[in-house]
Image (cartoon, rainbow, N blue to C red; front, side, top):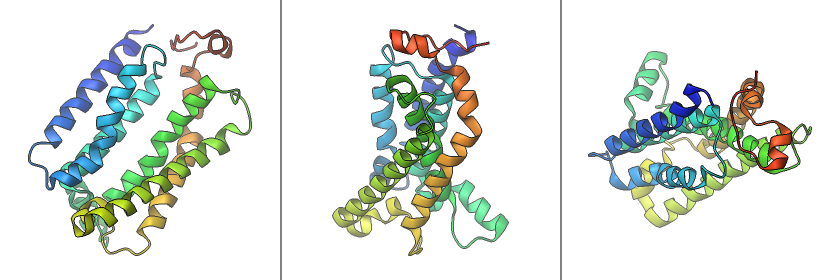
Length: 217
């Protein structure tokens, strides 16, 4: 196993945990912070518990860490108030803070590789023409589930959930969110599938239950 392969996961874990703790210090709204970062709070322990049986590729670890950082930043400031989004809005004279658009693009871009990795290593779909369409469908389904969660949060929290919804007055916000997740998933597969394949274990190792993820020459 290469040095980078050994060091990347713990380094990324430390980065994500440090960012999570920092984001929880005096966030704009504590409920919004919890709702936005719950995926990180659940996902990190899940990855750690399953690591011995299902270690992730370095590519996927990097993507998950990047997605976690997007979530914790949005949780700290609220998506409609992130400074980076305000800078983009002012620079390009946009009508709204676009940070939540980035978040929903990532909601498709990152899970696409996660779903692809699970299907390649735990199903007979490796090399199948159905792999990419099923990955995209899974990402779109997850995006739709997230929109339903936002709907339930709005019903339960009323105006208190406005910062979590981050619609910023856009009546088509839900449709935009799912569309961007769809675009993110397709873009991810188009750009990263070959790199991902190089980091995945050979098919024979998968069938034998071996989890060595050392890069192939």
